[in-house]
Amino acid sequence: LPACMAAGSIASAADAPSPAKPVRFIIPFAPGGGNDIVGRMLGAKLSEAWNQQVVIDNRPGAGGNIAAETTARAAPDGYTLFQFNIANTMAPALFKKLAYDPQRDFAPVTQIGSTPFILCVHPSVPVKSVAELIAYAKAQPDKLNYGSSGNGGSTHLVTELFKTMAAVNLTHIPYNGAGPALTEVIGGQVQLMFLVPATALPNMRNGRLRALGISNAKRSALAPEVPTVAESGLPGFEVTGWYIVLAPSGTPREIIERLSGEIARVVRHPAVLERFGALGTEPVGNTPEQAAIFLRKEIEKWASVVKASGARAD
Image (cartoon, rainbow, N blue to C red; front, side, top):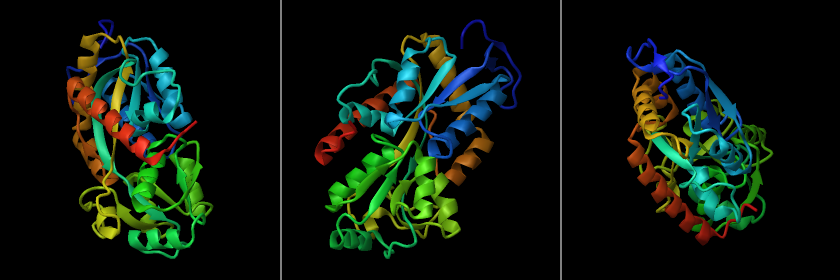
């Protein structure tokens, strides 16, 4: 962190530095979704660790692009961080014009973790498996709507991949964040959505939603009764979401390395590990170099998915 930051006492690392002023942590979606839940948890622990406030700044809209543009324009001083996610790696292929470059304009800090998606339907939909959903969609084309966190968001592209592989038609209803979309799925205004475990599990357990499959290659210990999408009716389908912390490009190397170490330490804190486990999030906490390599591969992968699906966000 910057030289102006003094040492502070914290529960997890007594010699950790403390910022001299509040740190802004930009989240690319509205409150209530999986990104927001993970970001707020990380921000709270960093506030505790640094003995300084970490201000959560929700900047929803345009599939995460508004948040990304805001971060790209911020001062490269270590006081602005961005929770980059899978949606932002899809943006270069989805949008004709972007006001930022996901590799040029950011400095990777560390990958926080990864998480699967759970395909959920409203209980009014008369299906109990992915195979039944596919058959129902083919028998009644244009009847099923799916919700997403917005055009170009992760839940948009994950469902487009599902549509392409299953050869079905589902109508996209974009929302300004996963939270608002979830509300509409629970209310039955839209029929299905891919959700992260943090938002899917409570609503599965109380009967508001029915889970058909999880996007991982194997079942989750959190919900072992839920089969994978692949085994439930769509062989070969596998997608994992993730969260990476970035800083504006030009942030000094020593600040990036210090931030990476501090965030990785927080990610491995027992309380965070316990909470991550409950959310179905696998902690990572890697180096800036590893995060950069992962990011480049994800951008390349999703460019291929977008091209194959023909999806556009503008």
